[in-house]
Length: 367
Image 1 (cartoon, one colour):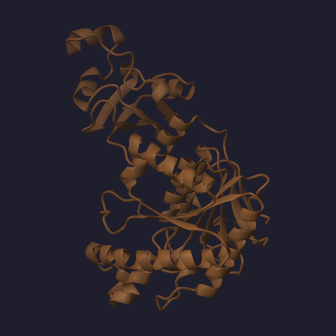
Image 2 (tube, one colour; image 1 turned 90 degrees about the vertical axis):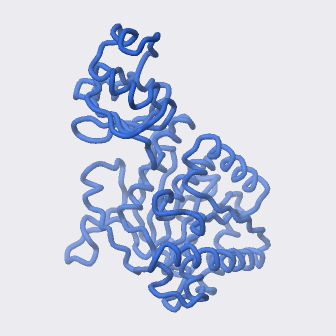
Image 3 (cartoon, helix red, strand yellow; image 1 turned 135 degrees about the vertical axis):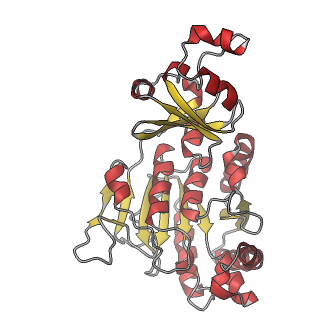
């Protein structure tokens, strides 16, 4: 158990990609899945709580319905395939885990379940209780109702958000590649990156958007985005190949993204949010002030995008790009009226006593 041993990682999230779980003909790779169940049983016996984020529903459903392009020819096909395949996927997981004396539990979530604070807390409570009860939650996006505009789109980022909600200490993305390379691994001379201390522009530039199998929806770009979310919540994340039998028990080559200092739960939720109702652009001086832990004042704001309301999650961007996410103290119309204005001007502009900042530091998380 070289990756995230139970003694160092009491709670683990394992994401399994479609190409590992489903064969090219659309059937379940049952023997391989039974090996994963054995790995999970061994970790559970050693005291580790494990939840699984499992892809594969669309691929399985497409085969049963005879749909072209693996069920991804249209949104309607994907939703129908997901509805059909999810019941099969859950059944297989229940069977292989039961054979190891474990109880499976199914959780289907949408983007809104983890992006809206109250629903996020409800999902986190359910997930935590299931793990405390000794079950193995098997989680997937509810693709049968999600639309292109309101969905995660890949299970890499979903796994990171689940890790955040569960208070997990580690995330393993089992995939068809053994980690990050300095360029597309198909290119000559590509070098494997075993450890990433900090995700910066150089690391992001190494990402390749392709999915080698053509079956899944996430490439290396989504995996690095997942690592950023997990690390901000205090969880380390590993990208590892799942092709070998028992990939959770073998010392396979992988890339480890080292976790940052654990952020308070609310700020970790803010930083990990995938959807923002708008963006507030700021000048260089305000950008620097934010990095020092200050609130966003209107005097440093230069432009507002989007139609957000007070309390909505907004992105904050400086001259060099995204800086933070936070909850706006004003709606978009009011914020636009305050751009570049000092605090002592606000009451005259708005007709009421102003709040202290556009985004207060207590409701903001740096990226």
